[in-house]
Image (cartoon, rainbow, N blue to C red; front, side):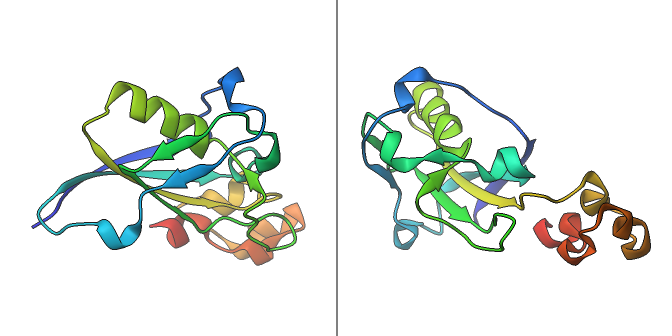
Length: 145
């Protein structure tokens, strides 16, 4: 049985100036997940800052995160997932690799730019969320759970 530890990270940012310039970002292949391994699960949830607006073409060093498996279910305001941009998952992964080189992590990102905190409420109410102008985002807390 897999041992999975859950850490909820909301709008957690690690800034590292070495991240910016051109390079490759490679995460672990999900096909390599093993049943009897221990993985630490980190949920990255949030709004615009979590979606990220960093340009991958501006990253200057290669990142090999072969012990970190990353899944992006986040969207920008036009409901598109982009492989051209990045968010805090790069800095978080760099810090995890530096501080815990022998541990394996699964990062799941669910972030939608333009969403409000009302969309993240465990007691989501569409009529209350409508005051933000974006009730179409729905119950984001329920979605990530």
